[in-house]
Image (cartoon, rainbow over all chains, first blue to last red):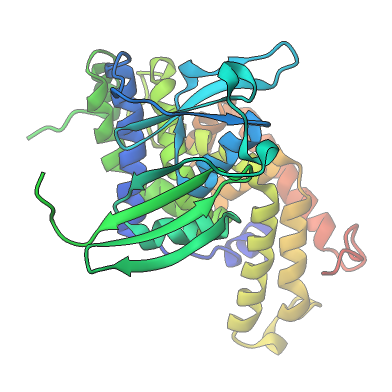
Amino acid sequence: MRPVDLVRKLRREAAVKPAALDRGKAALMAAIRQEVQPMRRPTIVPRLPYENVGAALSFLESAFGFREIPAARGVRADGAIDHTMVEFGDGMVGLGAQGAHGAFSPKRVGTTTQYITVHVDDIDAHHQRALASGAEIVSRLHDHLRDYRVYEALDPEGHRWRFLQWLREVPQ
Amino acid sequence: MNSPSDAEVIRRSLGEPETFGLVYDRHAATVLRFLGRRVGAGVAEGLVGELFRIAFERRKTFDGSRVSALPWLYGIGSNLLLKHRRGEARRLRANARMAVREAPDRRASAAALDARLLFPRVADAIEALPDGEREALLLFAWEDLSYQSVAEALELPIGTVRSRLNRARAHLRELLKPGGKNRERSR
């Protein structure tokens, strides 16, 4: 058998989920909107201190599906990321080196002093992804009073994230 | 009704960025399957949005004389996959195991090696190819791209694609020979 035919024998399909296509489209359109409306800023923007901003960013992107806003990145002389922003849906969070603005990482101070709620469209898929990326789940995925489905996870430095999907329409 | 070519859509998206969503609608399924074949559905899911985001950022550099954007998208995907070499290798080996299970009659093979030995060695041989050769080969053999499309994807002259594929074939023959270079690389 010719080499190329042998190579063809190893071709295998992977399952393609329509939801995966939708998520990719959402990621793309979010990026496009960012270009269209570079001045878009939510009214309240929490900022979280980290010992290692680069590692935190990688984790937040892979585990929680947050997206960095590249224009927001500030880099130190040694090449490490000093601060940046991530967005998810219409929310935005800043990540910055601890010590600046008098704020320190839970990893350093030994305790969490706040947590952030993030609304997601598909909590089970989100939970799976977080698990697969090694997030520490501190409150298991469960339904709360038939209102919403929720879980809580710590990022590598101990900031606490609460992910939630409403199970029914809620009045605005 | 004439729908605009990819080149036309991309040109329009320079002034109206949201138009670029149409490029996604047209090609995302194909691209997602391509990524899935290489690194599995899970990783591919994470990559497809990133791939199109990169394409969007680079849309000014798209060569408007090309009718289809697909080879260009394959090229961006190929670059992204370089960061996922370990996942690719795992998947290749898994594919080899499946190919062994599906082989109809191992004894009927004219090859000296039966499927059980052959397919894992094909996987290892693909894995052992230099990046440029492996990429050209897989775009050609798995994605059924023409030489011209592989050339567009990898941004190479068509002659270079031809010689890369020839080298890849020669390498594979060498690696698959009984007693070939990678015989000890059993897993």
